Image (cartoon, rainbow, N blue to C red; front, side, top):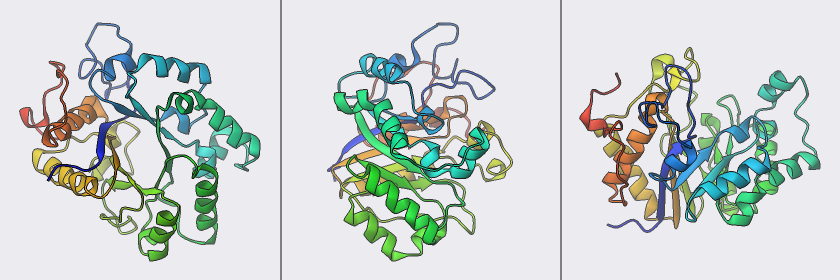
Length: 293
């Protein structure tokens, strides 16, 4: 059956210039200085913006991104950590994460070029694994939905207390908020593997399955994972089924070590019979090399 939804497959972020997990020489041409976003947008029609999690981006930078990407390109924007990770925000800034109207205005004004150009695909509210379904957590979730619900919104909830409560799916459905479908190592506190579709937009994030390094690894080694062809077939079937019940679907690969994410994204595009770009010679499909090296 052909997908009903319009499908956008991409990666979580596009710039990984440093460290052992760099994309240089794996996705971006080694030794050739290129504008990474322009280069990336030749192959994919969407990207997840991660920098906005740490601080609202400079609108002039965002304006530049708009003009460096094709007209049909979508950005998914991760919500500022002040709204979703108060402890992390305090550790980074030394200030309590008390939300004021100026914080909302600051974040929205930072992505205004995306809104005006209609290149804002989704606002992603990613909550930490420690974020539980209690009175405090539910109050935060409801506030985020109220503030950002007028835009296309997706929420990533990772603690099992959310999927154990059938009322959460109803809350998201009533507000047309997408419940992010995630793939990552599973632990006893992890959210259910299969979550209901709660909006006319579906949103998938594939983090890899490197359980050994998940808690002790750093921001690179935690995501050192290349999905095998068999695993890709499983993930692709989940996306295909969701596409039959939605009008728009985003799927992002976050297994970013040495360009694994764009490799697997291309794998999925090929399996779903989406238009394929000319693949960079340094970016083989995952079936063409050793897995999880």
